[in-house]
Image 1 (cartoon, rainbow, N blue to C red):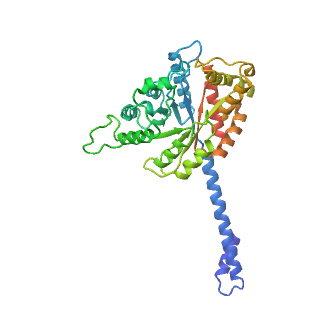
Image 2 (cartoon, rainbow, N blue to C red):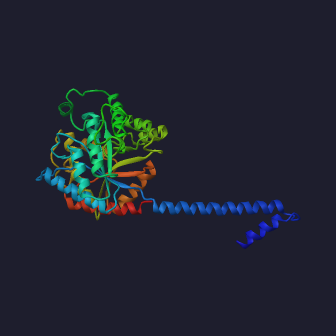
Image 3 (cartoon, rainbow, N blue to C red):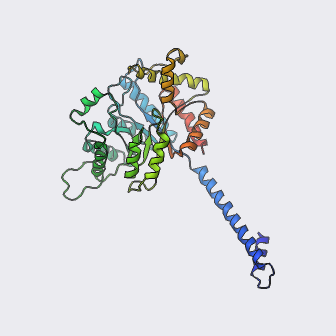
Length: 379
């Protein structure tokens, strides 16, 4: 530091024969010190800026159990996630599936929010084509009034079921892709402060500005989320094909909004952690079997893990299921940590959301604990 001060003083002397050299040297040293300081601040910021981890739950109904037990397991899992500092706990709407209990999504959101304290709770998502926007505004306005500052409203445009069940849900609400943007805009309007003389209002709901997310597995919702300036969650946990393209289009086309000034991306994965890779792979067979069963037209309750998955699926079923579950991270903390680090590098995700589908509830809680350790070490 003394040398720099001395050189700087000499450079101020009008008779110094090396004025130009000294000035250049001082500027170089100062620039170097500024660069070092910026790098230090950036490193400190990275150390304290963890990538949030969140959870997507479908309230799986297990063989030998029922919906009541599924909801009890959900609450135990949500409480653990809350204590471990997970960011969100989302519940997905599905219908007419004997292995999934999350059909009354908003009811379960309220149930989970009531047994937790800090974690945000929301839908991942509400399938908006199944509902009138006003009803969703009222339901989530009620949730936000009960649990202020903790409710998220994730929206999807698929029915979350088969065509026959979709018709039973919607009756005459059979539209096309143009209906979804209109419905989203209508829902946003109900959640904003009501205009004077507005004939239809969401009560409660108006003025509460519940955060809206768009969910998707193709390019349509990515483009719409960008246009509306909304956060975007990609369902890569079961639809990996368009992940990179969807994120690129979302980021390139993003327009700032009153809700969000910069693009925000959540990437969905399947993550199952255990003490060893071998144990994690065995537990994960419950998810693999469920995916095979869906290919076979079966929608049965979740079954226990099996020892030999290769004896259950055919080579073609294996190919299809492994492609569907491409973004799955199964193993011990080290294995999952390296996999998720590569995913973050690949996608620049702002947040990771994982399913936790395990037959043994205690193994699911243990997986959450290990994943929290991975999160804390992931920079």
